[in-house]
Amino acid sequence: MAHTQPTELPATELLAAYAAGTLSPVEACEAVLQRIDDHDHAINAYCHLDPEATLQAARESEKRWHQGQPAGRLDGVPTSVKDLFLTEGHPTLRGSRTIDPAGPWTEDAPAVAHLRAHNAVIVGKTTTPELAWKAVTDSPRHGITRNPHNTTRTAGGSSGGAAAAVATGMAPLALGTDGGGSVRIPAAFCGITTLKPTYGRIPLYPASPFGTLSHAGPMTTTVTDTALMLDVLAHPDPRDWSALPAPTDSFLDHLGGSLTGMRIAVSLDLGFDTPVDPQIAHAITRAATAFEELGAHVEAADPGITDPREDFHVLWFAGAAKATEHLTDDQRALLDPGLADICRQGLTYSAQDYLEATNTRMLLGQRTAAFHQTYDLLLTPTVPIPAFDAGRESPTDGDRWTTWTPFTYPFNMTQQPAASIPCGRTDDGLPIGLQIIGPRHADATVLRAAHAYEHTHPWPRTTTPRG
Image 1 (cartoon, rainbow, N blue to C red):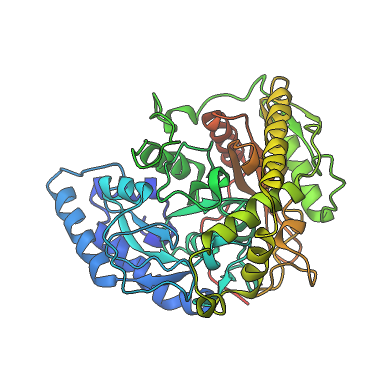
Image 2: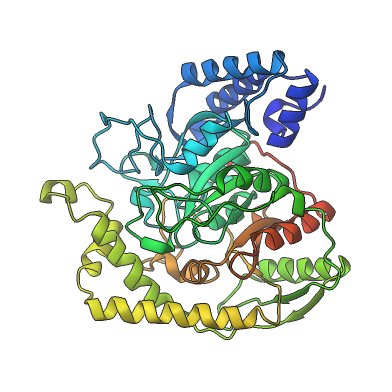
């Protein structure tokens, strides 16, 4: 502890330090706020901060710890919330100039309410592209969010601010969303850990205009923190009609199990003939070997699906059109031009188009469920390319973000749990993400495998921004 800064500690170690009396929540939150002050000008991870409220919550937590009466599993842990979740007392602007910051902001989303119930200290709101429509993070309202490993590169998105904040030590826990890869893509680009859980595992309210593609997920520096945060978040809320029942036991309790005998498939392209950067392909192959060394049976296998990009577009672009249907012409003129484009395209689809896309989605789910009768887990790259230049939707002019994210959006369509964990770096120091996918409801199995890999292949927890 003497040589480790509070901003370098995961939540579990912060909590242990609070219990031992070697660190207080006030000291931890002061260190996080200082870290933000020192480095966020180069990253743009946060779009809203309230240091006074943060420190007041930390002082209240400190009092509980001093009295030996901590309340909740995250008491005093600095935590960020993506600027897509309703947060009482904080504006939720969703990266859009069409939203009035005056509010009122009087309600918490279910996940935020769960964080508060466990006395996490909400440090602030993190940046998102407008209405979370794309897999990079820049918006007309809040500008470009950059990758801490190279500030000329994108942090990914749409939970890019959350990922960059965690990677830079600007709070060990972050709450993100994922409709097509939005926690996994920035986790891979920024070198952090995340899980898109089974749909409904974390309740959402208001309902997303993107429907049942949208998930919420924890973003952290360790698999243990991810499991801890999921324990807090994975409880139903009556405002979400599709929420799953509460788990019967703790995700943390499942982390230590053996992988011996586990059946794991590895696919470098999902059978789509997707070009994958050779350094990334090598890192995924090396990771697959590590799972063999952990006792799993690993073999190359594809899940037998075709790329559902066009059907995903129907669902996603129609959702964007729904999200903006209330806007006036003057407000539409304020939108991100790319978002305005997909909204216009979304309005061209018929009900039959939407139902056909939904049918494709159901077939995908059937095929992946059949695949998981043979294999417990599937390993893929999270993203087939390293982080590219910041401020672009795609490394290639004119392409939508879905052209370079073929490994993520299919598993929003099937609602399966999928983690991303760091598994190496490119020659120029950019993180590489390994995606671990399980069948629906196998969140604990995904986390157990991620934890076993992390234990034998530890990763630096935080980084200082560099250009």
